[in-house]
Length: 469
Image (cartoon, rainbow, N blue to C red; front, side):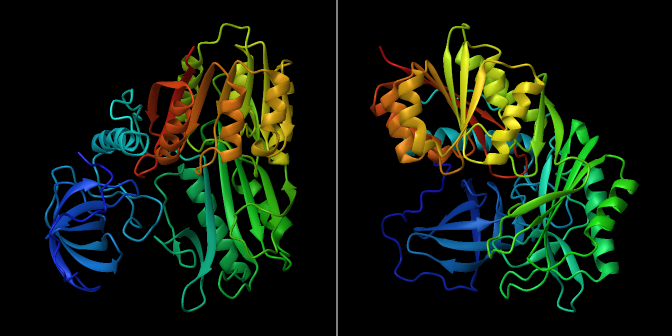
């Protein structure tokens, strides 16, 4: 099975390719990493938005590419037996969820297949030791962080919601996101009401005018602790203090309200100069017994329940004996480093975001961890030097979606730790890096997919590599 949807057309493909706007009847037989259904007709490959394996659909062609054709479902003539009614009223337009209409057990099955396929195609490992995926008992209301954008309707009314699928400049006015706790939806809706009543002007991504850019919400302790972070352009936000105090009074879960001023044209939700309007500039989450201070800028996994399963799988894979020196790359606020420090002799974490490094150091102090230190630097810039000094037995890596930087991967291989624990949010770059590690003397022992993001196509994995003797 090719679960990726190989874009190469079959032999004997016809000369004429369907034009944008044409409607065709297609039978979906596969899913692609990206969320689309995959269909084949007359030697052509179609990537069909909202199509599911087992569907027969009438699909409108939206775009022609060199090796494939993009389309979207206009009508489901014969539904897949696994097709479900989506919970969310915004599902058809929102870019957040790709698979709310697919039975959750099937979501898990396809994600596991996609991981296997990535290792087969991209790493040349058809027999990769992929373990069963770890799913959720209740795959709803799981996100502990969401970034909402301000926008406006055609009549000028303010919106507050999420980006439309495939658009950076179109905002959907969201009433209830089923991935966030209910209290977070209530806070967002209250902010929108205050914004409309106060005449706030949304920032326009194309014209670069207006004030209000984003509202980021973080929850901890199962929703009992909340942080709200406003992001504005360089224009004044005169209602900031009053807004923060009103929210804190109406929602006792809110412990922190932050304000970030971002005059740049970039689209990052939390960027620029920040100050606390109410409470401290961080909230506290508990993961596997660790109390972790989290600021608005620092990275933490967005699914706390599955994060515990992910980190436990990583710790189990490392098989610590208590004597190791460990390097933790892309350490963020330090959760992996501090969990490892309870099991190893010494841990050094490397992270480039100053606020996250500050969190990590405070978290070490908060949890009484004395055998961990943290370096604020780009991993690819300092790893070779740090690794030469530390002589690490184990390296733990949790890189961004792009995977390990080439210089970082080269420095890791040169350091030759006996074991590598790799946390990945992108099976494509994990498979790419796995191929490089295998070519330089490492054996892939196991890959454990963990479903951190139900109803989306995203997949988190924990992989263990051991250096061959």
